[in-house]
Structures are given as structure tokens and as C-alpha cells.
Image (tube, rainbow, N blue to C red):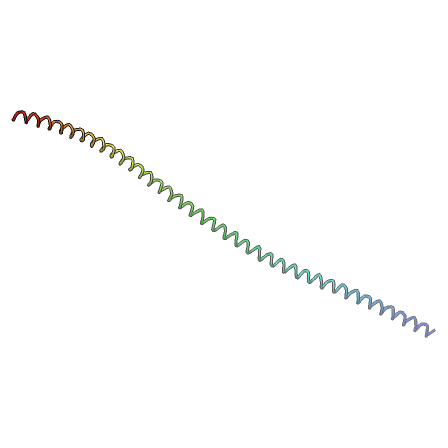
Amino acid sequence: QKEAAGLIVQTSLLDAETSLLDMQRQLAVEVEALQVAQLRVTETEGALESQVARTTELQLIIDEHAVCQRIIQEREAVLLERTQRVDEKEWGVDEKMKEFEERSMAVDVREKSVGEREGQVGDDEELLGKRWGRVE
């Protein structure tokens, strides 16, 4: 009986040992699965950090673009103002050119009138010369 009881205890111990070994294997598999999951989490964290860095970089680019856009608008406003001033000066030059042309035409009319008068004077001198010649 003692032998049978000893065998039963030994069998129970072997069963318990086998059960413990199975549990250890199962724990090892679960630990490995957790390590794989931890590796994925680490990779995901790295990807997220990279994404955050890229997002920060993009935000800096967007901010830079906004500053450039503001500078461009300010320069466009200055150019528009300068263009308007140039247009006003050109308008003033055009007005002066019209005045010059009007004066030039008036001078031409006067010169023509003077020319006609000189022609008349020349004719008159010729007549007078003929008359003077007759008088002498």
C-alpha cells in the first residue's frame, strides 16, 4: 500500500511537474508575444515621433509661407502705389504734351500769318519799288 501510495504521489508530482512545464511554455509563448507587441509599440512610437517631427516641419513651412505671403502683399501694395504715381506723372506729361502741341499749333498759325504778312509786305515793297521807280 505504501508503494501504491508512493506511486500515486509520484504520478501526481509528475503530473504537476508536467502541468508546470506546460504553464512555463505557455508563459514563454505569451512573453514572446508581449515582446513582439512591445516591439510594435516601440516602432509605432518611433513612427509617431517621426510624424510629429514632420508635422512640426510642415507647420514651420506653413508659417513661413504666411510670412512670405504677407511680404508679397505689402510689396504689391507698394508697387501699386508706385504704379499709380507713375500713371499720374505720365498723365501730367500727357497734359503738358497737349499744351505743347496746342502752343506749337498756335505758333504755326502765327508763323503762317507772319509769312502771309511778309508776303504781302514783299508784294507791297515790290509795288512801292515800281511806283518809286516811276516817280524817279
